[in-house]
Image (cartoon, rainbow, N blue to C red):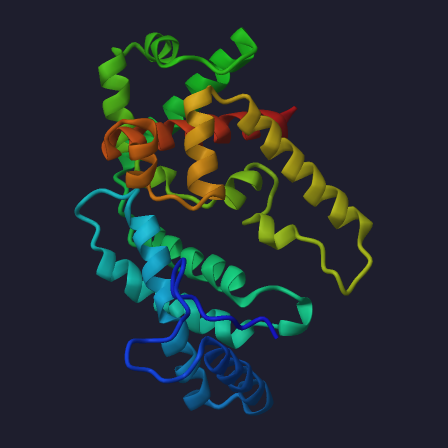
Length: 276
């Protein structure tokens, strides 16, 4: 059963002073999952929640790096706990998924759903986000390439510094999972909603999934190099924005701007593809 512990890179999952080996911990978690699958006991579920709680802190920390400073990470963790509980209750080991991968998606989704429900983003900021997306789409169609910041600023009647300030204001609107971008304009809430069910033969769903992945890969390939690096390091290498800043030799706030710009450009490109 895929129920490995998550304690961060290089960690065995064994706490200081614990005489158990990593194999002992693993065996205990496998047994705990098996018992929970048989009895669905709340006490067993709570033990699983406690074991996987570090996942919530990790995901909340990653989401929080892209949010304005007034958003408390502790609030994100509280929302994420509900996502973890939901993941444990709905996890189906027989589908062959690794629990951590499944749980991180549910935790992140719960956090983002709560942020949206609380409407952290002012209406004026949402309006600016739409203006920027439409500007990127118009220029992309005209130039047949991704517009530069200077070109986009001119299109929107702004200076480059003003445009980057807009990116900073749009940080919260850009905190979306990459799979949500893949579903943009396609009538799906998430790429996970259209993944192939390995227990059923559904060639149509498989083709749709492949089409979405292809469109996303093509959109990423059209980004300018620095944006492409930010997307790759953040979503595929799991680096934080601060770590990406050290790689690129820029500040974390600048990486936030680059991330926001990349997400807006990806969204505009995917919407353009969906409307074609």
